[in-house]
Image 1 (cartoon, helix red, strand yellow):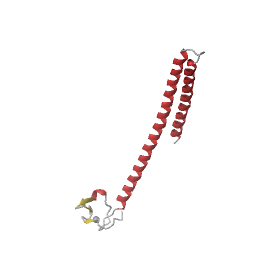
Image 2: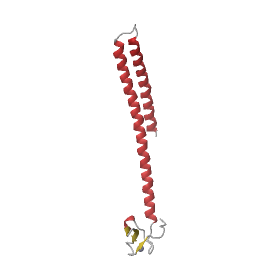
Image 3: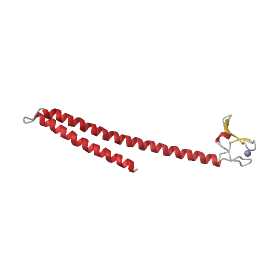
Length: 133
Ligand SMILES: [Zn+2]
């Protein structure tokens, strides 16, 4: 989290520097068009404008990278939760006859119905009733 704040801070600094440089460049370009201005100011101003735009782009890129990173994190958290739920389900699944713990491998779809084959007692039955797991 601290890392993210630092990145946003960096992006903010990039934006500030970019706006300053860009503004300075624009001022130079405007100055070069005035009567007292030197023509050198034009290239000077364009140079500053380009560097400023680069900084702005870098800041935007940083923000984009941070937001993408956040999204990836959320997806990972959701995946973890789903995994945990799946494990819980399998843990709670027990053979109706002998109470032995079954895994997802012991449940197979036979004729469109989930069918349990207990590896401990050999019982085979369909999960037609509402499963408690
Ligand atoms: Zn069994």
